[in-house]
Image 1 (cartoon, rainbow, N blue to C red):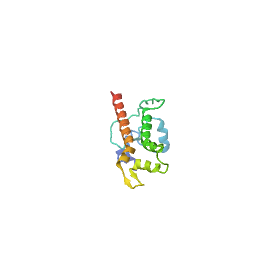
Image 2 (image 1 turned 180 degrees about the vertical axis):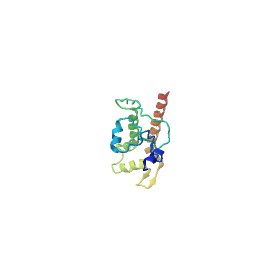
Image 3 (image 1 turned 90 degrees about the vertical axis):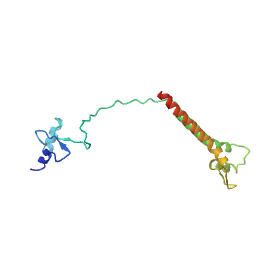
Image 4 (image 1 turned 60 degrees about the vertical axis):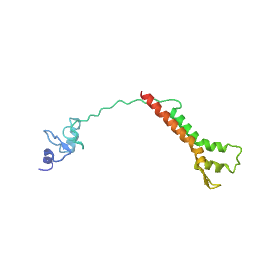
Length: 151
């Protein structure tokens, strides 16, 4: 009997509907029938959906290219500026000696002054408060801008 009767009876789950002529028995016959209707080797998909899925191409949307500098880039630069500003303010001060400037900059960003060995929340606020406020404001502006666009 061979494997052909198992295929005809549906014991192999991956080949269905062999048709009247049965399964193509040789590779050359399968190649000959490749240009004709393909009813000999219809394969069942792994999912058990009964509907036929067609390859329908969706139209592609064209990307609109914006020229110039976007709002996101401006907000990003503002955030970077707010992060760097406390350190730059100390670096450009003329009244501080050059040896103390790294300690002051480190104290602004970490809150710890290694010269005295003390932690100061005021120095930490002076270093990070501009960045936190600017980040909240720019994020809020972007959210409001998105809400207005959807209206």
